[in-house]
Image 1 (tube, rainbow, N blue to C red):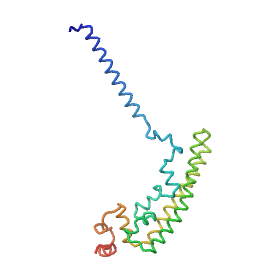
Image 2: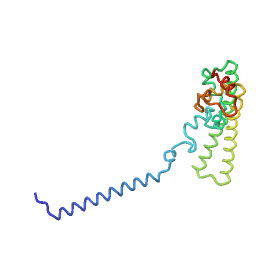
Image 3: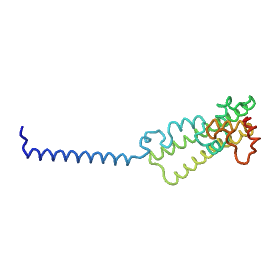
Image 4: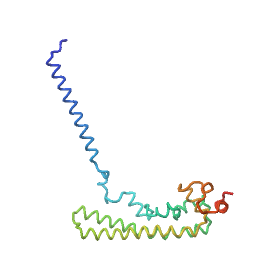
Length: 204
């Protein structure tokens, strides 16, 4: 079969056009993806600033990461202490005291958590309805900040109560099991007497 030179030229032009369109489409898709917000998809939330997990944790009086300043500095929280009571050998008396701490904390945290959810919902609705202005925004944010501060205080203040109930050995064991420290027998903190540290942590 004989191919006319004109057909070859026309065919080449078609290929070039298709190639150019492919590059343009790929470039546009890449640019669009780059412009997408990291929040894309969150616009379907009932409260834009809170995920389903956030709402579940706040409603249940859970930590919501508010006690990290204590937890990650070696000051245990009651919820995890109760979960690990066997591993760190809590006595019945210790369990009773820690359970009381937890119950009091959870009751307060649930009340404050639900209040925070309500306030965030009101803020969300004000933006959705376009009824918010600078004055009302400041008032709403102030109310949210006050509740969040009180909620964080409840969690952190409860952590402050646990060290007096526990032994140094139990605290070290807790932190090791939580992954915050290595083997207490192999990691003696600066300033501690080696022999006493090893004894207190059951290393001998």
